[in-house]
Image (cartoon, rainbow, N blue to C red):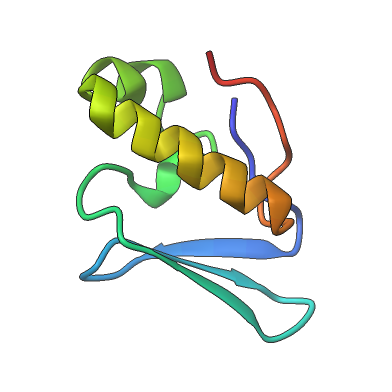
Length: 81
């Protein structure tokens, strides 16, 4: 399961996803296109089902994004595989 930190939010934009932290003016723009929906980070969309429909290259892109989000404090660091 992937989950946002309590003070963080995500929303869908034309380019992909916008992550923001309500504790301060921190934003992260993720050019994901249609790879991921905000529900991926809130438990509304199954991580396993999402990853199954992606190619290996897309899975690597998502893994890199999750790593970056964890390092920057937007999500809780958890195993996805």
